[in-house]
Length: 306
Image (tube, rainbow, N blue to C red; front, side):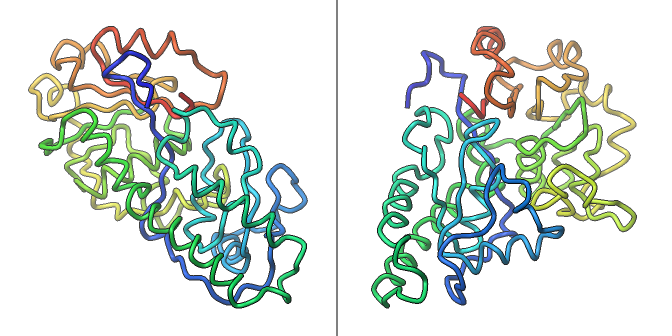
């Protein structure tokens, strides 16, 4: 991997909660999913179950670059036992979607080209088995590298913070941000209340009176995940004092473009190597220069569209 001459600048991708991975490769009723990225009239699913079932019943599903190369759709397709058909995958920069198995996605394209004119009713047992084997390889890679838990472990490993016990996860804007929300879920999965999100990101918690469906992407995959008890409200009241007392081993800014609360305070009381900035923006929203400004100050920076 080209680290762009920096030991503190790293690629990062979206991830998916383990509880959303069902896998399986049976009861296929169509060769290619009817859901087409960018074609609004195919976005007919209003709930997660129906949306996931669309992929479960399909051998292949189209996915592609949109605002950025990395899309949550890639992970949702694989998690439901379906093979992504990603036509322009070879054009993806090497440090973008770095953790996805691009070689397997290329195999998926070749497999779709092999069978797309045959039709599902003419698929031989060998053809079905070939698709199943690739789906299983993709699923295995997803489980081993691309769950939210694995992404949190990846961040800790890259920054040499495997021994951290308490994490402060800071946000400015608390509205949905796939990379921030999913990465936070990974840290909460690992540390529970010892990863404190401030301010609280309400939609990742299980709340009885919250309209998840009104959120971006209808709240599918990234919301309603955690027990509310894993957020300790008492820690909210002492946030400044806890920063000054160095209560946390590591401070993470989940989206540095969308706010960096208490940065001056954090900078006074924490070594730069113990602070992480994450950028989940689409292509063209930020620049390499903005990442390097932070890196040159000694901070760790993880970028989605690197």
